[in-house]
Length: 318
Ligand SMILES: [Zn+2]
Image (tube, rainbow, N blue to C red; front, side, top):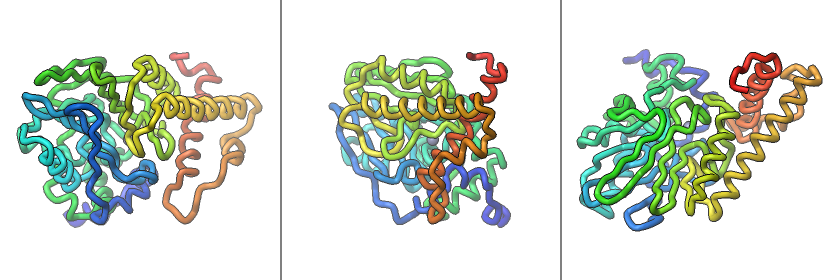
């Protein structure tokens, strides 16, 4: 086991670097009731994907549906306390919006209580490229050993969703949909049609930028269009505050991705190598492992490569 605590994967910290500060010191999540029986558990606001994510749960007369299990067993226990503050109903299902560790490393807590997991079966993420032991070891450094006590992987779905699935429980309806590999291969979004509430996972990040390094910018644009077509009354992003006007957050995300794609496309058409294209972007903040600027730079690298493939005719989807 010692090896587990000494190894580290540069990829993990490239993806979730400043989660290093997402440690035992973080405050318990804030609960917000969005509609009868529908709650958002708000994580850290103002730190983008460097902070504790958002999650949510839906209380029905036949049990509770949790949406995302947060970054550690401890965080999941805190979420469970929030659930217990409003209901004694058992947790029947956990829906995972994707397989990034900050959204699912608490899942085992709910599974031990008898909950079943709904997720996309594609669990691949860049952060796990070094293997699961390395991923756990790195995550211990992120959230602290104490917060990880009782951890085991629990994100393999009992009920896999690769297109659309509808969960009806105790009078509530949740439509679970895979929008394509937009933020990550295993993205799901959760839509409550009656309440017109969408849990978007990291397709939307209110206090940062949506990352596409595990996904694809073209798929993200399609996912944003799908969100628009739902015309949600409220959206819970993966990180940050619940926006007052969901359509503005969608539009801002689309504008960012569209501008990035056209900038990278024109760099390629000018014959500019990636390094020169990147020089136009603000530099990364060296005082933080990965600042917002460096996230933008990582997205730019990804989008440059996407556009290069498309330019060379290697992208069969365009
Ligand atoms: Zn994510």
